[in-house]
Image 1 (spheres, one colour):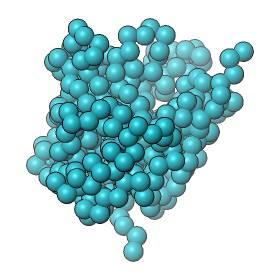
Image 2 (cartoon, one colour):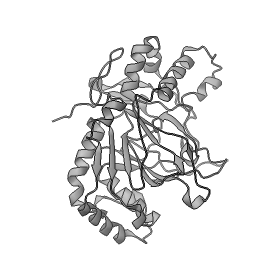
Image 3 (cartoon, helix red, strand yellow):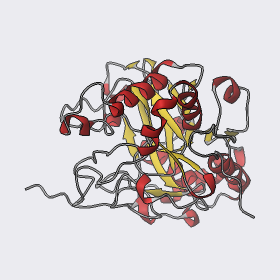
Image 4 (tube, one colour):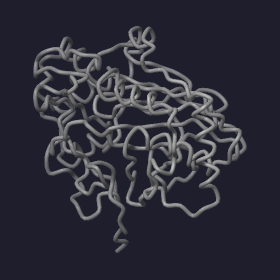
Length: 349
């Protein structure tokens, strides 16, 4: 039997379903909070230690490498809430201090294999990304730089996961927000801009992740879309959705510029709409990238590089979900299961 969509609706009408929530509602709802059992931790320990010290390609690992029978019921419940519920799941209880960083990566990947299909996050074929300030002015990847992030979705994945390894000295809180709620707020307050949001924007693709495809998507990606049978999806990444404005010489009062200003105002200045939490070392947070957005507050890091704030990031496809329409796809050169970014060798000429 098919499951109901988390968010459903039609243009110029409010979205309904569990994907619609605000801060008060999500804080009062424990359906997205999960804990690793002692049995699962023991099973995970056995699997991690069996794999430790080996030269492993993450893309070749499967559930068979991580036998976690006690985690099956929890994994199924997490998949339900991620795909068809609030779209958010937090899993706690892993003790990072008991393992090396390489072992933690294995444990995180093993847990993720029981939730979905991990996919590559860049042309390098990296299946686990390190979210850390690399202090490298040449590296433009946002997750390799410090500071705050505005609400956004990641370019191409059903689920985005973060696992905390080390906290910063102060700050660095995680924020999560419902795109369905953002839609409903803008519909109520800025109905004259909705047709622009439904039409969307051309997106710049990161280089060299785009491979041999065009720098900009040759189509506009809708900010809000109602796919087959009214399923709600969203795609918004500030910056990558704005670079074309200079290319096209758009005036500051152009309706597409005005709409971007309006949505960013909601993303920045409505704390009553988003959840804000601190991820403790060992906490894992997973969000549905189709209808939630995430962000980070500014933070102060430690002086010693060995203590720098560090999280691990993973992208996954969630089996059973609908096919994402072509006009909602940021990258054409995808990895597997219709998500991620294909590994490639960039042309340096």
